[in-house]
Image 1 (cartoon, helix red, strand yellow):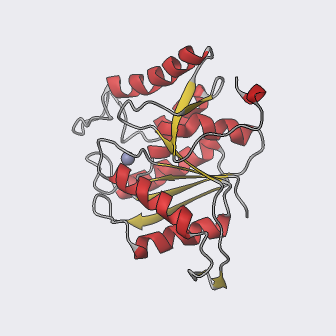
Image 2 (cartoon, helix red, strand yellow; image 1 turned 45 degrees about the vertical axis):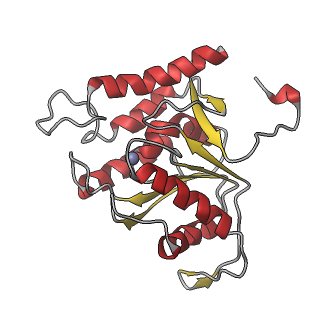
Image 3 (tube, protein in one colour; image 1 turned 180 degrees about the horizontal axis):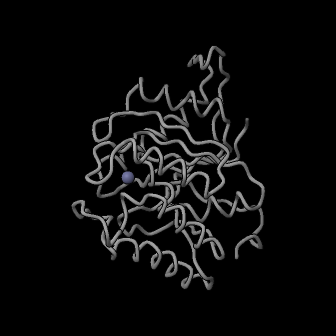
Length: 238
Ligand SMILES: [Zn+2]
């Protein structure tokens, strides 16, 4: 199966929080979208790896993605090296995405910039034919995604471009709230974390609404780029 878009996240829920609206919009247009989680988020203060496995499966169903895979690297301790790059390369070569969305380049959680660089490096290396990979018994061919974009996470980074996600905020929030163990839940007895406060979930929605306000739409999600954004026609811009 070939994907149009592969969204890669260090932890299950990174993708939903940061670019869930963009993915939902492309899926509604008939595009094939997949999610690759690097870890199971087992160091998270709330919930557990098993609970997050179930929550991430539910979130994937809500968004309607074509595939979701978890590489089960060590949460907090995974490194960006040949071994981890090769595992990501195998997934890129298997699904051949045109666009890869990945973690924020700079962020509060140390796994986010690490995951960002790992995904970006793997996208480049995946295009080198002399790197041989065998996945599920098949010799794989090189594949380099056309674009790598970084979604914005905890920090208020300035986006290089934004995607209008008007009409898709309900779907995004539904996917986020599938992670009941992680986000605001007035009934929960678990310790509070930065993302489990009511302010955190309200802020996620507000930031999208605010980006929408700035471009004259209902809501938007922001991304940063590794090279100039190019458009075929100046009329493509909204
Ligand atoms: Zn994360």
